[in-house]
Amino acid sequence: MKKITLVYFSPTKTTETVLRGITQGLARSLEISGAEITAVNFTSPKIRETELEPFDDNDIVLLGAPVYAGRLPADAADFFKKMTAAGTPAILTVVYGNREYEDALLELKDIASACGFIPVSGAAFIGEHSFASTDIPVAMNRPDENDLKQAEDFGADTGNLLKTTTELKKISALKVPGNFPYKEGMGKGAPDFIEVTDMCTNCGICATACPTEAIDAEKGYATIAADCILCCACIKACPEQARLMKDGPIKDKARWLNETCSTPKPVQLFFATGV
Ligand SMILES: Cc1cc2nc3c(=O)[nH]c(=O)nc-3n(C[C@H](O)[C@H](O)[C@H](O)COP(=O)(O)O)c2cc1C
Ligand code: SF4
Ligand code: SF4
Image 1 (cartoon, rainbow, N blue to C red):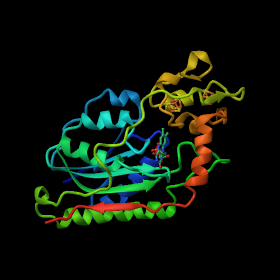
Image 2: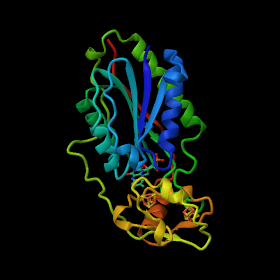
Image 3: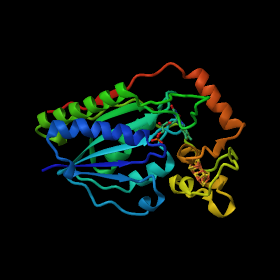
Image 4: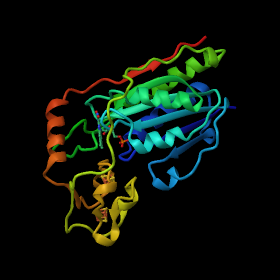
């Protein structure tokens, strides 16, 4: 009996939503029940301190992360690199905010291969941009119904590929777009771009949502700029809309993205060839 494991980083949950859609199609195609499906959401810094058990050929693993500056977020890449696998098929997904995904999917493929996975399929989906808000709606509400239908179909097609492949080790190498050396990624540290208004009720939800422990509850839930990765999970999680993006370079970037990347991009899917 095969097991499916989702391993993902997803501060604003679009990657998680896409991976869940892919899993539905995959599980249906391979007749794998919900009891055999587990998720490792390593957005939480506590989870990133743990080591995963090695995967083997009874596992099928979905790896997913958002695209940050055309690369994987550094925290995600570092966690993925700690995994070990032996002939385990991997389904690779990056989710980006309708600009470009550049080298992120290639980086994920290279990491997965180095860990011992056999990448069988890869995808670049669109997710609402982390910087989006109702007045600057970059890729707002993606993944939409159509994206999620494609996610399910992608999962089912990958399941069919696995069913018809007799020798996984001889599968053709998965080809995905991207260049090596990869483009320069982002470091940690952000400009002071968030304000906390007097609507704040001190509920602490933003601090729990933050993947880098960059919110200081003792100082009015202020952002610790040096630890912030700009993911905007705290802004989107705040039930009072008390955390707002200030005017400044990040808001300007959001406006620029909204003007420049307004044409919705299609999902891109890639498959290895079975033998
Ligand atoms: C710091 C940062 C950099 C980003 N860089 C890109 C990028 O290079 N291209 C792009 O299209 N979207 C970019 N995005 C948008 C995210 O990839 C997108 O919103 C994604 O859906 C977020 O995934 P999540 O919901 O799983 O956190 C960036 C977001 C952040 C926070
Ligand atoms: S989630 Fe919003 S209301 Fe709650 S502590 Fe954070 S800023 Fe305040
Ligand atoms: S403080 Fe920074 S890193 Fe933490 S959730 Fe907010 S934007 Fe993301």
